[in-house]
Image 1 (cartoon, rainbow, N blue to C red):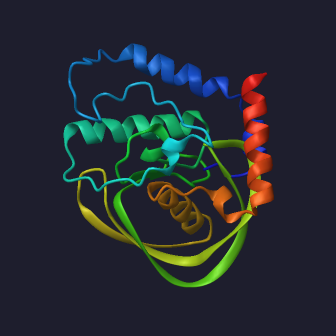
Image 2 (image 1 turned 90 degrees about the horizontal axis):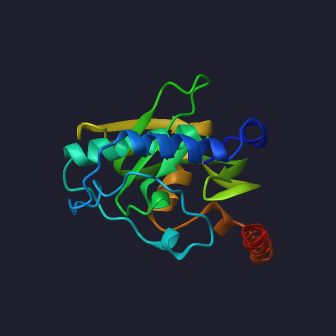
Length: 204
């Protein structure tokens, strides 16, 4: 998830590509390991309307070293993009894992494994963007206050109450785990316009 248009203007998309490529070069990966997480080295963010973004993620059975390494790569990809949230689905790993950092200094990462959300009340409308829909921002209405239960990066269960931007970001990223994007909250006309503009941009 992007925070706002201002953040987008500060970076070029090539930053993410360069950072991820450097990360991949540093790792001595063995591709004969068939573990779904181990196979992820270069975390390429899928872009709408890629059909893989519609895949419903599965629960993580247990937090292994491979899962922990994947979480670190997911965080690095999020920071490099740059974004304030990223779901495993967005990098074509269909497990229920999201990472978030809405802190001002971008130094307070949150990891949610197998998250479940309970709505506590209120509604808020805010401008949202998405790393899988780069360059587009729209107003979306979501619950103002929520409670989320999940495992942290060590597999320890926790519960967190959130509101404001954090609540929006958690809901946005959890939508990805269900195969849903923020553009699904828009009219069909707006979705089609975004899809056509993205496809046109790829052809140029």
